[in-house]
Amino acid sequence: MTLLGIDIGGTGIKGAPVNVETGELLAERFRIPTPQPAHPNAVADVVDAIAKNFNYSGPTGITFPAIIKKGVVYSAANVDKSWIGTDAGALFQSHLGGPVTVVNDADAAGIAEMRFGAGQGRDGVVILLTFGTGIGSAIFLDGRLLPNSELGHLKIRGKDAERRASEKVREDKGLSWKKWAGYVSEYLEELEILFSPELFIIGGGVSRKAEKFLPLLTAKTEVLIEAARMQNEAGIIGAAYLAANRS
Image 1 (tube, rainbow, N blue to C red):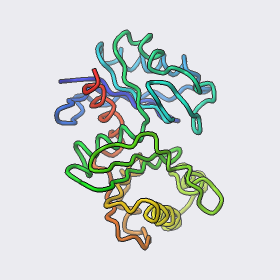
Image 2 (cartoon, rainbow, N blue to C red):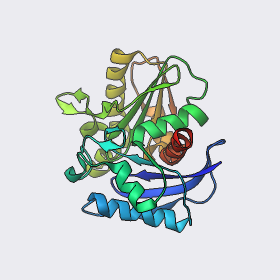
Image 3 (spheres, rainbow, N blue to C red):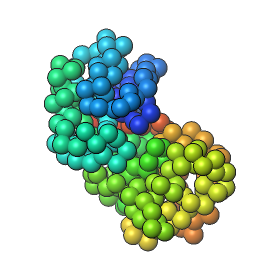
């Protein structure tokens, strides 16, 4: 079965058709820069343009970087505040014309990794973390998702963790990989104290450069740490998979 997955981020919106039985992209993903300001209708127009690029109609899975409950947006840490209270599911459906499933972006990435990637077959507590504009999180217990965890807002030294250890912070401050890995390590140690996970999966755009930072992590944790196998395509894959299983 083939469904369209679309991943909405702070800097870009990308999508591709996905084989939801294997987790494979069936075409090169198509990306359009996120409009600025990223008001709901402007973003929905881009989502529509991505669907049209693939000449696609049918059930669609869409990620969004916020707390999502039944398609409604409840937070706006890294998106325009006008999204709060927006029924994103209804908005996107009105533009696309078919059924839409909207899910938190990190939750979608986590679903993809648990179904097809680094978390496949893992029991116990698994935490996926996406490092990008902010830090997204997805928590699983024996393969079951605890949605909307938002662990990027955990306070570390009086600041949201994502304001110390996101990929955007590394780029904006010109941090060396070693320096940034130190901030990430401190964050992982705090999460281990709170959740005692069996595995951390490091995702988001930075997972493409795993060889640059994974060996530098100095966390005292004994938890296994792996890079996301789906890398930055995980959100697209997870969104399509969820849409297939909810449609």
